[in-house]
Amino acid sequence: MRDTYIFLGVLLLFAAVNIGLVANGTLAADWTGLGIIVAAGMTLALYSFLYKDNPLFKFAEHVFVGVAAAYVFGQTWYPTLYGELIAEWTDPGEGETPNWWLLAPTVLGLLMLTRFSLRFGWLSRYAFAFFVGLAAGWTIPRYISSFILAQIEPTLQPLTWSLEGLNLLVVLVGVIGVLVYFFFSVEHTGTAGHISKVGIWFLMISFGASFGYTIMARISLLIGRVTFLLDDWLHLM
Amino acid sequence: MMHKLLAIDRRIIFALVFLSVAGPLLAGISLPITPTNEVKAAYDQFEKLDAGDIVLVSFSYGASTQPEMLPMSRAMLRHAFRRDLKVVAICLWPEAPGLAQQVLEEMTAEFDLEYGVDYAFMGYKPGNFSVILNMGQDFHSAFPQDQWGAETGDLDLTRGLRSLRDFDLVLDLAAGDSIEFWWIPYGQEKYGFTFVAGCTAVMAPDLYPFLDSGQLGGLLGGLAGAAEYETLIDRRGSASTGMSAQSMAHLVIVVFVLMGNIAYFAVRRTSSEQRS
Image (cartoon, rainbow over all chains, first blue to last red; front, side):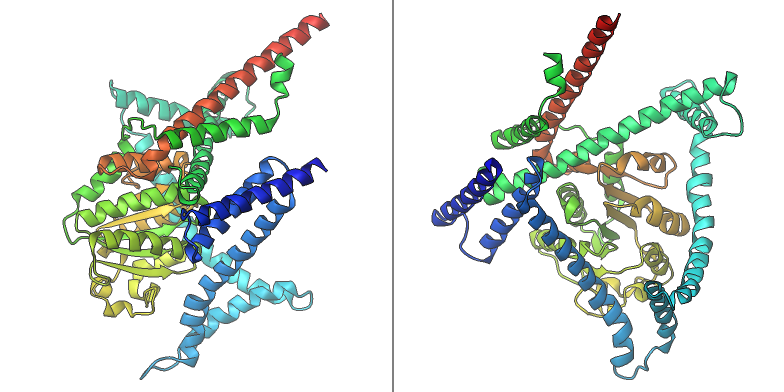
């Protein structure tokens, strides 16, 4: 019951604040003003989850999922599926003939949708086989080149008596330590155990750095929304 | 006391984090910002270009990361246009076109630029890395029309662009894995262009090895990277304003981490003493 009162109180407060903002001219009584009010309401509704799960949060969440899905569909349908596929056949332009070669990838794409049918699901294997083969052919040489060969070079630079040399040494020790840690064919005892412990330390430091950056990212998003609420909505900044 | 500290209501922590963010924003506190080497490197890549050189800007982020990505998009575009560079913008994320159009309109209006001559917006193309391969082989085939349906071959800026090699610099503004899994293996490595990136803070640690290898010519990580770039171009924006709030929120989180650990070890010590 207490939560219901809080819920209704917040709704009334939000309405009162917006009426006040529009009445004193802080927010324009037009579509832009309405957009800001809706955005502020959605922001507060989503953050209300931090207090407790509630109908406002659920409403905002469902609206977001629906809008995002429709937006992505629109972006994919109009410029690409319609613009570069269907229009190629139905409206090829003056002096141009329909590009029927596009039927091949279209059929392969449609075959993927047969996964939803128990009877015809096997047809999707042809499309997946084509896609997996193509992607593997593209990916394997490019990844070996970009992620292994190109990364070996800066790791194996000559060591020097300088800060840069120390940096290289740290990188080298880290790479060897982590590689040994992930080498499971040898029991991690004795020398291998000591080196793998060094690897664990490097991994822990790496996870810590990633976690720190993640906190920074999340706080940045909070700053963005708080700035919107204080500046664009309430005009307090 | 220590038990109470460990059982503190999480909503108190949320409220304090909110206050630590809102307080500095309302007070307008400004802290000094020192650019890091990777941000300076990205800035220098733009400085090396001559007026009229063409930069490909790929927008690969959505609304959920806009607070981090918009300030850096704004700062880097402002730098590019200030140096009279031409910008061709593309989107490899379906959510990106609206956001890209917004920042492009804002920046091109500020510099009074002409569409099709000083900049072009090609819109969104699905296909992830295959679009990059396609652009490498034939830019016009990958983007036959711009965002508003004009033929790529009819725009002055894009008429002569045939491949990714025709761009003097490529910039990816990304909130996903497009930098390391799309642009580096299928674009930079294959076509050898100069490549710089701006990304969310979550992604930044994974990208540092690519700076050492030279596959990335510069990197902006999150709001901090954007604030550093704003400092370099001498134009404070929303990122610089947000950094004081960021620092205060980090301070609050560090204090809670320390308090939590002290309380945890104190309780553990008391418990073991009671047992013995």
